[in-house]
Image (cartoon, rainbow, N blue to C red; front, side, top):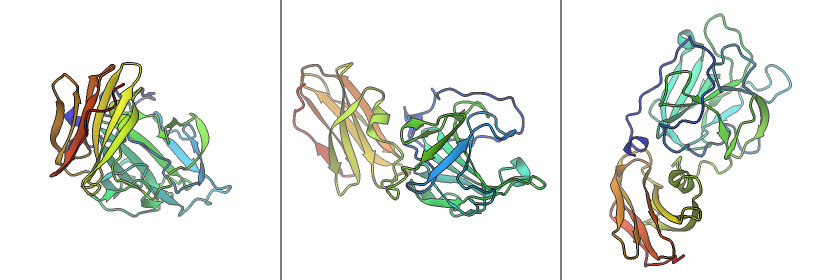
Length: 300
């Protein structure tokens, strides 16, 4: 449970060898961040996963122009919030040229390769939708490529290239091997937190209530799964995202002991789950010295 919320995640090694491996869902990683297309709002880009001999699994090359150089210099933005763990020219090492890698926590990261320029520095915290570079054609010496964005999603639960995952944008899996996708990366970044409550609680849970903690330091969410008659509580951080600070989430089913998850977490506390068929619940959480406590309610 703690590994998906604490830092110290290793950087995946880049390999020039290996067979094509079609990676499945990442069971060892935490909940998938709410990724959006890595381009500004309402732009339509055509992605192709099979037009390069360098591809190993579910990588995507993106273009939108009608000529070879039409996309050169177009803006590339972060698909989700996170920390920049690579911002360097790596052409001689692996052919990626100007590369930005963002660690989104929970074992998930994204790669943005062949950039003409990089707009973010190593260790920078970036918001979803923030500009991180421009489409380019940088690579290793002698490798002449046309401008495009090479995009990857990786996890830390397997060795390269088996750790490359299918890309999901706005909740929908990319239509491999190729598809034109319109960006919904539209809110200017919003909260820096790459997670949302339904992802943390899991499949079948829906938000039924929420409460802001303090001056928007965090938000506590109460969710319900009608199929299992379970409630779930998670507290998502809105400030100090990516830094370990005190945060908690709790759930108390009427007549039962309170369950609490608390500690110094980077992104959220929880999920705290309990079966509550036909029973009222108290729920809430804290961020630093601020907290929210509900009365007994939602007696479903």
